[in-house]
Image (cartoon, rainbow, N blue to C red; front, top):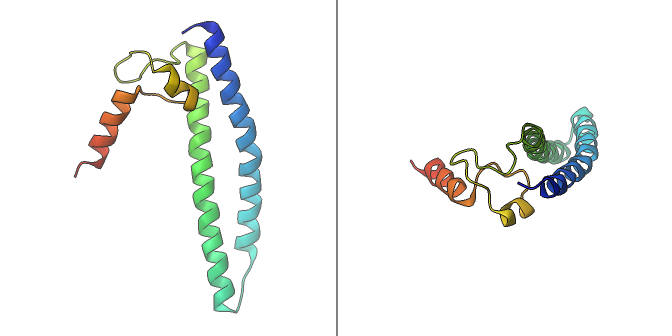
Length: 119
């Protein structure tokens, strides 16, 4: 992959990482606030438990995205960015534009999803 293209994707990944970090910090603070409340009213307790579950799910989602960004940045440093981890062919540029942390080409990703859904 051309150096200019890799630099563009690296910038995009770094920008997204910069957006995610404050969100994770906010979710951490929100989690501490919600779990710190103890209510005697069961409706208030149920609301806080639902909110805590939502915060936990959002945190996990953002952490997974952050991990995939870090992995992509590592692949940039090692020179393997843009190559499918399964077939080693170049990942489609349009796919990288939409999802710069993609590790698999569209065909291999689709195949993996089919196998993951199989009983």
